[in-house]
Length: 156
Image 1: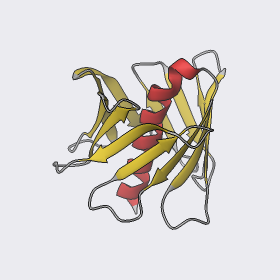
Image 2: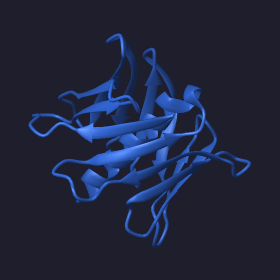
Image 3: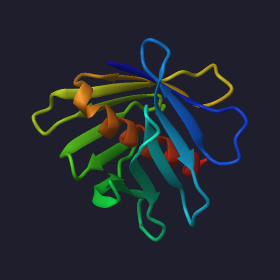
Image 4: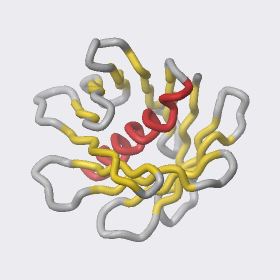
């Protein structure tokens, strides 16, 4: 399953539409006023399905993941020299990016690829192409991509 992640051009808070291969909105992401980033994810039927909340006082960036208002776990940036590297604690996944931070690979503990992520460079807003291997992982992969995007915006 391919998802296309595009930030809206004119929005006060972070807001994104996530499209499937047919150009239909699969998820909608809305930012809310908060101490740190707070993103709420809505499904195709406009049901709130997940929340990402930035932890403020941490040595390295960390993002709490909520599903159905229950804390599922964390996405944490790990210390690395040249390439961005993240741990997804609640799914036992790892994410490694390229040196420019435009290409990412999400792998499970057996080193099988769960998804890949590519940032399209020549756009006015943040635009990503997400290739998810299993449809059931789409929401979790989207949350990882959103956390990476927050982290990149935070470090600018």
